[in-house]
Length: 541
Image (cartoon, rainbow, N blue to C red; front, side):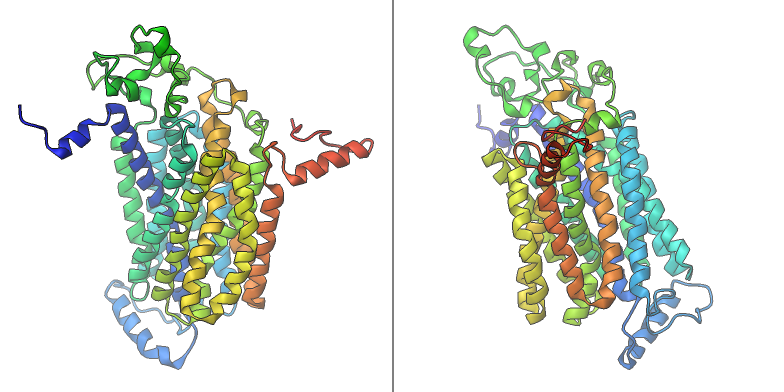
């Protein structure tokens, strides 16, 4: 018999379950990357919505209007000025652009608290599909304002609010799905790699938006909207919420590699094992899957679908019940300040680069992607360190401690030239996004499967929504504060970011599960008679 080709040997070396895991990992990666892809255009287009009024721009403006006329059958507007797109062409443009950011992020923060609770009670595939289709619609709706010559501020604000609400369907859904498929064994590294979808989405969104921003900025929104909607259809066709939603294939031999690593390791189908085999430690990646594996239906046919009664029979956790899980409140407030810093960079970095480096909107958008490149390495590094040390909280604290001085260095060094800006963008991106990535992925998944839940796997979406929803409050405040503070000077914006990083560090819980703020409050409660609150660290219920 001829030897199998190397490629076929590679494919058959992995079990059916491992291939499904890889597929779900990749699918959820691109699904949520498309969400971030649709959030980025607003930061790129800001430089086009408001331009620096200069005589040298008159020729460029004439060609811009001539190109725009090809897409607009209506009469050329008389209220398009050299300073940009009305109403953002006035001196208060920073406040108006900040209002756009705030309307999206505030709606996102409010909707996130409800989204997790709803997501626990609906099929993830349907819930996520509807959210992605609606997000594509409202993202494109913002860009249609260009083609239909709309200059009403409230049109753009309402588009942002609606988009913020529907985008809350994304994060709890994908985290719950990835948490169902992967256990705790190497969760930090796996989710650190997986969470790079935020940076990948930001990079792709920047490049797509920058391609059209100087000629037809409406397409900078329409094209990402189409991409999100298409990915929503892909989600409906291919997303598998839980390993038990597909049949588990039996293997004839307990000694085969497939048995040791594949889906056949569910207890319900495990053949008789001797004492030596049963004493072997379980694969840590399967620990979460084995919680209620005995309900898995067996079939030799790969087309059989199980009902998953064991999974849906457990009642979903309440909002207050999720808050009582140790660490949820502490990490929520830590993420609030960490996300404030990250989203300020996300929404205002291209405009800052335009002002400091005197680049056009397209080049500034391309350069700002380096911050997200640094964020990819930061998220992976944070996950790897937290797995090695087995201390997620300490890893967050260490990176937050380094982030504050790095932000200050960025504000100083970025004025020294383009090369210095590039280096500091990479370093700042790694240290700012590292803790943010770790908390929203591995930490949320750990808390959603905390031992106090006694195997109830239906808390993951609610816990994820609480943590990310609280973080989104900071994400809403950051760009708003930047819009209000930046007229007084960019240095003041960076001072605000440094204070936010320090607050995130103070709220970061130690390995005891209590933040420095919590320890101080508990200590004060002990000393003052009648003082409301806990008398010991972690006693918050």
